[in-house]
Image (cartoon, rainbow, N blue to C red):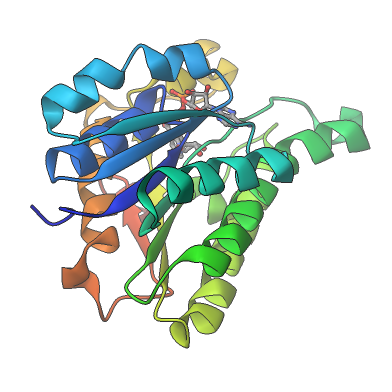
Length: 245
Ligand SMILES: NC(=O)c1ccc[n+]([C@@H]2O[C@H](COP(=O)([O-])OP(=O)(O)OC[C@H]3O[C@@H](n4cnc5c(N)ncnc54)[C@H](O)[C@@H]3O)[C@@H](O)[C@H]2O)c1
């Protein structure tokens, strides 16, 4: 029970990777805040998290792009349990638009969620976490290599790795570790909504598709005390896709 007595906030916990992460941390004793912009989706998963072992679960209606809502989610954890130990910045979105057609509003929307969401949570966590706290950022293989039509997503995920390094440096004196996971293709609604896959422009071998639980296992390791000497790291969890020529 690596997370007994711990409090964890998982953004985008209503579906896919976030849900698997919430379930994994719950199964190891964590009290969970599911911070999702679709609270109904998260609400429907509360019983499942309790069955998995969560002593308590809270749903926070939270669009991570909105700093006031992020403050609210962090404060809700403090008000209910008096502590915050783990933040998993998982909420994310993608658009599929050629660079020539992207407006600044398009850019801001993706950067607002995929980068600024983690910026807001990092600030709020740094203000509240005690030494021993851990932040895990869910980036993507797109932080390193990418495909057409997803420039804002790739840029946001690359910047998220940079934020991970900066926050790891500044977190060190606070005793807070900050790491990133780079998932490859993972079997979630987001993957199968990808028009590059639907059109056949991008092809995936079945062995290149992981399960949300594969990502959750890596997140749990990085968030746990046994990773006490791991900070500023970027861990590929991609079935080896980034290693291939
Ligand atoms: N699925 C993949 O293949 C894959 C690969 C690499 C990285 N990722 C990353 O993993 C993370 C989770 O992706 P997923 O595949 O589980 O997606 P998903 O679409 O299955 O779930 C995303 C969840 O986040 C919530 N969400 C979306 N925008 C939000 C916002 N602004 N504020 C709060 N909640 C919000 C949604 O309501 C949903 O519950 C994302 O950051 C994504 O970029 C996914």
